[in-house]
Length: 125
Image 1: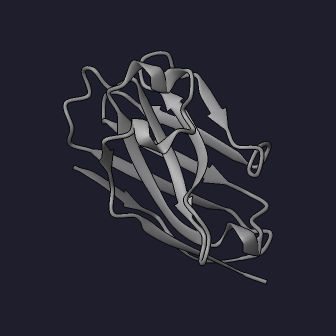
Image 2: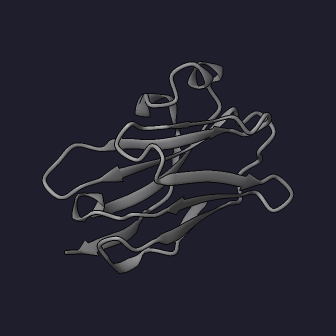
């Protein structure tokens, strides 16, 4: 019910845009977020957006290099990243939370019950 798209191979220093299409009932969704699984590492929080208010929160690792946005009419969420680094290589997932506590701690993956299958982003040096 969440489908990511837009991944691929990008050169270091380049940019990419990811999209997340939701077929969920968005009434009751508090937070949408992006997470990523770097190779050999644990899942990382990338950033989030409050579905109603649009407030965003970015992980320090991507702060100033990423922009998260949403289109409430299309039930879409977007991630735009620039200045890509090899360490940004990961499988990127979007997630949705119906837990109001996700507004205060959006980086907690346990608060998200719906996840997409992910899209691979590979940054070459």
